[in-house]
Figure 1 (cartoon, one colour):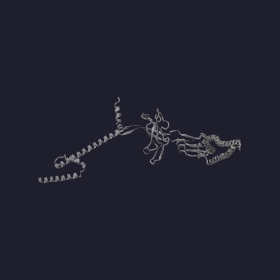
Figure 2 (cartoon, helix red, strand yellow):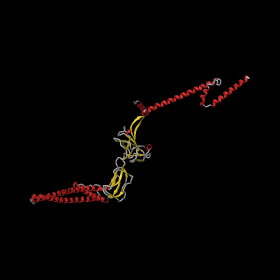
Figure 3 (cartoon, one colour):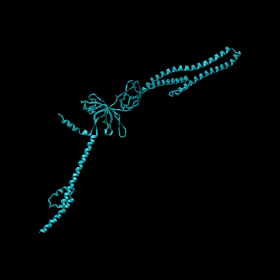
Figure 4 (cartoon, helix red, strand yellow):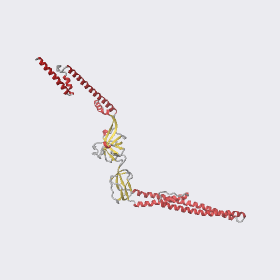
Length: 446
């Protein structure tokens, strides 16, 4: 009976070991700690070999646990050191923010006509962007143009005569200005040739007569020596030859003198004609109404072709669009202490997404000496009209934004903008310890 019980215990022990091994194989790694705890069970349930294995497993788990904890602590410490070093040297900008609007650099220009006239052609439409000097409209200039052409023809004629007379005085061939019409050049050249030919023929006639007398004198002188001809006759012949030489000189001198006298008269007429030309060209030029500056056409009051425009009548308006924009911003009094003219600023337009299109760089040009109340657009600017603000003017470096394709995005007067004025810099570390500094100051109060 005792042997039978021992065999049953042995069988039960082997069966228990087999079940324990099966349980060890089916148990997940996460239950190893529980197994280690079970190692503390009474010795009669666990043999010495299994106990030794469980103790080694428990020690390995403890070592692995502590190694992972130490690595995590070192990693967090290294990250904290790197972050503190970075925060100490990295700087962020301090900005003062205000709301404002785009305003033109100059006031709207009212386009008028100095002279009365009739509208001949309208060159622009409302909303068009025009450049400085661009023609906006044209008045009928039929009469003034006719007077101008007549005066211009007179000036051209007098200039051609002046050129011819100067050539007659200098003895050179005249060279007429290119702007003079060819028919006037040809006419004056014919006059020059005719007068030159008349002078040459007269001089040639006198020169031939003098040459004949000189020959006769040469033949008479031997005869006077022989007594065949009287001395008085020889002297008469010589006097006639001298008179002819004098006539030649006088004829040439008269040609130049007459040209000089005529030049003085013509030059006076030319000066007067040029003054008249300038006076008569002015109405023709004023018939072209031009834009005084770059801007946008607004409020065209006269569109009827053939309509009468009175002198001084308002025709249209031009809203200036300069290369630099002016932003009128309003700053809260508590934020104005560090703002100075010359500080850099960034203008962000509410009409265009700043994250996509960016903003306009600018410079503060004006800070109002005292506070004021904005009565114009408090609702649009998100301002309380009962509060006071400082007025700041910012001049931008550009007048438009660009999209991803490089196309210009216009910035028009009246657009709402947010202005960020750069007032200084501070490190990330200073920003992080700011609450501690404030708390320290609060604790120091009496």
